[in-house]
Image 1 (cartoon, one colour):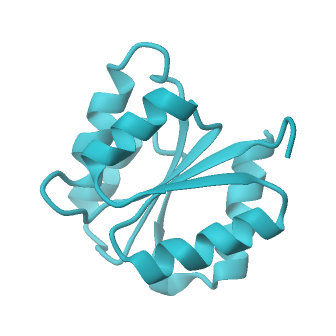
Image 2 (cartoon, one colour; image 1 turned 135 degrees about the vertical axis):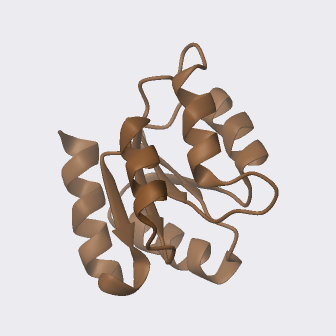
Image 3 (spheres, one colour; image 1 turned 90 degrees about the horizontal axis):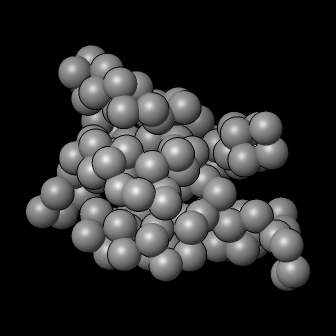
Length: 125
């Protein structure tokens, strides 16, 4: 997949991460996954993804804390991020938006196909 856009999925639910990984690969993207914020940051620095799909509720460190660190990390601070979660909390949404998340999606409100379309829109523009 030469010159394929890279997506990093940071999601602690392995089944969900694998499902999205398969869908994104099927669409021609190079896809990586991490299961917590620390691993996500290491992967981000290493692969420099074009877009991160970030779960907000993660073990140890949550997604909004990850976003805050990302924005302060040289070389990857401008990485596009779509936050998604089942956590429909106004404060978390605002914090994610403040740290530059392009969208904050509630997982149960979208089908995987709809999430795929949103990802495509943000990775291509």
